[in-house]
Amino acid sequence: MRVKTPPIGGVTVLFAVGVGAAFFASLVIGPADIDAWRIVKGLFGAADETANLVAAGIRLPRALLGVMVGAALGLSGAALQGFLRNPLAEPGLLGVSASAALGAVIALYFGVMALFPLALPVFAVLGAMAAALVIQGLAGRDASMLTLILVGVAVSSFAGSLVALALNLAPNPHAALEIAFWLLGSLTDRSMLHVWLALPFIVAGAGLLLMTGRGLDALSLGEKSAQSMGVDMGRLRMLVVFGTAACVGGSVAVAGVVGFVGLVVPHLLRPLVGHEPARLLPLSALGGALIVLIADIGVRLIPSQGELKLGVLTGIVGAPFFLGLLLKTRSEMR
Amino acid sequence: MSVLEADNVRVAFGAAEILNGVCFSLRAGEMVGLIGPNGAGKSTLLNGLSGILTPDGGMVALDGRPIDVISREERAQSVGYLEQNAVAHWPLRVDRLVALGRIPHLSPLRRQTAEDERAVEAAMAACDVVALAARRVTTLSGGERLRVMLARVLAGTPSLILADEPVAGLDPLHQLETMKLLHGLTRQGVGVAVVLHDLTLAARYCDRLCLLSQGQVRADGLPIEVLESDAAASAFGVTLKVAETGGVRVVVTAEKVL
Image (cartoon, rainbow over all chains, first blue to last red; front, top):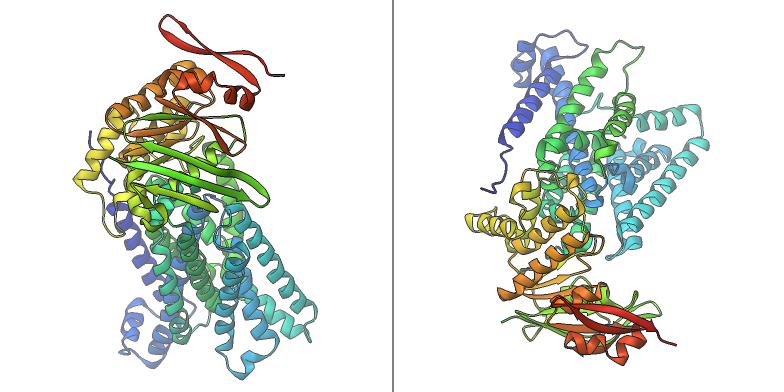
């Protein structure tokens, strides 16, 4: 008998190719009627002025953000589910998404955004970081999983209430509408500036989360067994909390709240890696990127009065899908 | 020769004293039973010995060195811990679960080597779970799952093993097999400390018994002496008699202590 690490190269390569294909599709599909070749030339500034502008200024940042946001959300979801040993966990659970959204809403509400436009993403990242710090402070180093989840629920509700307060007290309907639209989540009309702003946070966060693999594997056997195998729970918790905050903060900053990606993607991919938390991490990043790219192409193709928001689509497709999935697999989850 | 010692260990959760000046030792090659009524502090002592929990007072030492100056990895390589009611939270393949036992030996970026694979294979053979290798752990029976969890501990090739109620909830056959397996390990030089509620199994397989009650060690010595001691009678609230039938020791509850 040989106990070998099972190969996952095939699946990973397949997903990487899928992301590449979806990325290309995201570049060439859009309302402006420009053929694929002109877009490709436009990326290098070698086409006509319109194509150059559409390719490099509109389509490229949108596709790049799709990859970044999707990967960040998929990876965060996989890490949180592994850490909490709960397939229902998602970045929203710790209150990080809600707090990032609150940061963005504050920027919109107090008109800081009008003073300098970058306030919107900066405030979202600050919100996510604040949530992570509050969670760390309240849950402490040796808190149980239950405490962590409950603190997350509290932070989430509080941030949600403050967003509701902002909507409630909005000075005019236009301001309320702006806030409501932000909360829906979208990749439309983003620039390379958004890409550069989110990139450092998402890269740093992904780096932290990818370091959690072995600890998450050990945690499959429970907290005590993991500790007995030399896992430093305090360090692991820090990596997960701050990694998630950076990834989700960066994502919400540029795309608003895109729900269910962090929930559905790890859940779907888990069987492909033998349910092993460490091997799920990189695959969930790829899977998240793939799903967000496809969904973002979807909102461009689905005919509607005004473009459908990405977060609306992921919610409408994600929620019932996940419910069905849960009902189907309930028996095998303990 | 490995030795794990607790010296005057105190653990308190808030106002509740769980362990109050406990001294205990476990040496390579011996099988020590930790017995005592519910809430005596047996599991807490194992947690303290395994480094999961840091005592509020006293010291735990591995081979004479305080456990808190030893790196987590080094400690985990020497001391294996089998959690009470050990379960897997994901439906992992059995061989992959056992391989998790190698984690203490893996540095952050190193993948499994041939040596790791050999240790995993040996552990699976020792616990008779080779035939289960491709099964999902969630599909196993209680007895099978325990053997798999024990194989996970053995895969880390620890010199000392701490097992928290490994036979709880198992049928008589599996209880016997588990105890035999643990006992067999001591013959290979591994030290085993095991929390037991079944006093007959304790009398039969342990070289030494340590009786805990209300956070203190009340007796520590040969099984028969500890079980028939006044300390055991007052700790359990019943007098115990060790009898022998067909060459096998049995412990019977004689009567309630008034």
